[in-house]
Length: 204
Image 1: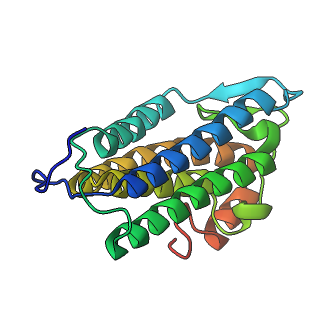
Image 2 (image 1 turned 30 degrees about the vertical axis):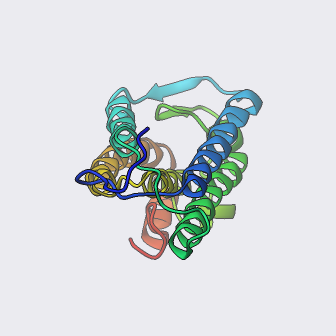
Image 3 (image 1 turned 180 degrees about the vertical axis):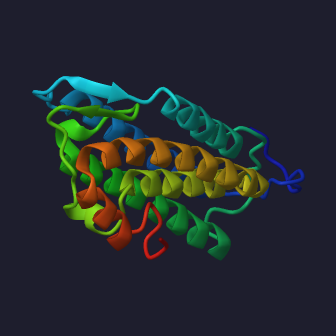
């Protein structure tokens, strides 16, 4: 971490408050993910099919977070400045929203949730809660966290590079997951796809 008056290319100066907001958002999101992994109830049915290609999507998404997070950090903006207060509030709001959306979505999914795309014999097509607005709200929660992280660290060009990668990785995962859902739920899933956008609200 470097303090100074001039940021390098692609990095903008931030305040300690802005940095703290990014850390808080990241910790909340991480806690939500860990809590879900620890509390996910065991499903009764056995795994009937699993997608290995979804691992590629996970890897690309992970790379996008790496690009957004890693790099020079310039802490030189006064904490009490209007810029610091506004950006800190934005970062905290986005980060908390992402963590809360993940938590809510994962709770609604229950035993249906998993890291790698797979179907169980007792799998359910969930349309309640956040899933009534987006078919994949967890990915939107991750996108919010990606933005909060990059803005909080002042990695603007990192965010510009990371978002397309994240979208590509997400598209791979959505394609694999929906292929499995379509095979198991047929017309019910096709109707869900027609009625509800994928992972960005109001965009089909």
